[in-house]
Every structure is written in structure tokens, then in C-alpha cells.
Length: 104
Image (cartoon, rainbow, N blue to C red):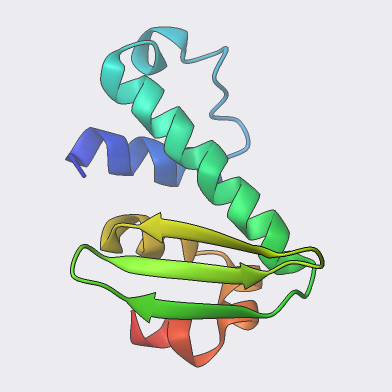
């Protein structure tokens, strides 16, 4: 993940004042749109993990596969290592994943 995308995702996740509307020019580029898409994906995963559903983390050749057991099925998300590290910056995610979050 290029440096700008990673920094933008991290800032979107940590700084509530870093809004899409205020930083429209920076986030309207292809890299900015990619950062927004990754941020929304990670936020959705964080919301599922915060609901207390069981989850498993599997290492793959490309990165990490996160499997969340939902009530009617399961949700599988393939993440790069950089995306998984950004996801694990949240204390809610670290608590939900436990040991798996610490190893990554």
C-alpha cells in the first residue's frame, strides 16, 4: 500500500476532523478514493467485530483472511498485512481478535 494511501486511511480512522468534505481535493484522486474505500471496509469489519461475534484469523500467502461467524452464515475478508495492521490499531478489534491481533 503506497505511503499516501496508508497515511490517509490511518488519519481517517483516528482523526474525526479529517473529513472527506474538508479534504475533497486530496481524497478525490485515485489514491484518495482507494483510501476512502479501504477506510469504509475496515470500519465495516470493526463494526462486525465489536458486536461480539466469533472471528478467526488465517495467514495466507497474500496477507490475512479474517472469517467472522455471523448468525446466518459467515463473512470472509481478505486483507493485506498493511490493512490488517491498520484494522488492529483499534482497541475494539484487538480485544475481539485477542492473540491473533498481537501476532500480526
